[in-house]
Length: 255
Image (cartoon, rainbow, N blue to C red; front, side, top):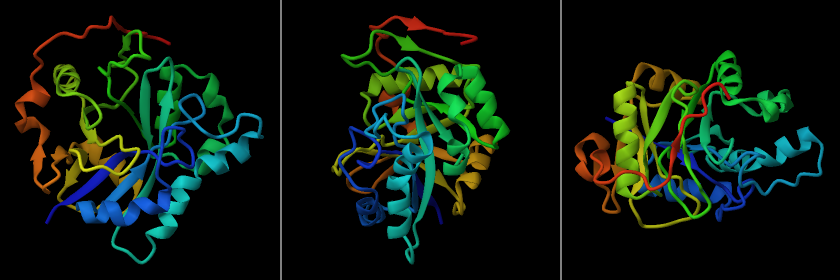
């Protein structure tokens, strides 16, 4: 028996680019073969739709509402909904796992932290920090920022990236020897390839996910529209780059 988990998902409750309400993902993801999902909406320094003019704790309540609506909709179903965050610095983004709404409510200071300060704070809370889609290139990006000493692992397969961008991330992470993750970065329903982490054992909480990533017991996979699950390591176009990045690559160490 094996279990698939979506690790990178956006709702319209908190992400300005999200098109789906949290509760509407449940049956869709179950039909795709997932055993659970982690909601990772854009935080306040990213592409958020949470109003800026509210008190911090009210903003956090709105931010977590997509996750909470999904959690409620999954009640009574064999599907685990977990909480995460996508945190932005200078357009380089990180997936935070193992923190919760209460931690966010009590830590408004994270908005002023550097990458390494946030990395330490997340660790103290028992969580991990994964750099998302590190070699992504878009028209709104002017460079690629890599922070190998401020992350616990790297998202090497992102279903919203083209293969060469993922391959560059795979080669980079393999050279570093860091844990690898995969996710769909899903914002709306589609019939395209998706990403997931595959585990032999069912995850009961996001703490289980954190432990699994630390122990490297999960396998990054691609989920094809026909239901085929393929380890990313077996997909040449996703692991062997054919061209260099066109944007400059920066290493903002110590920031």
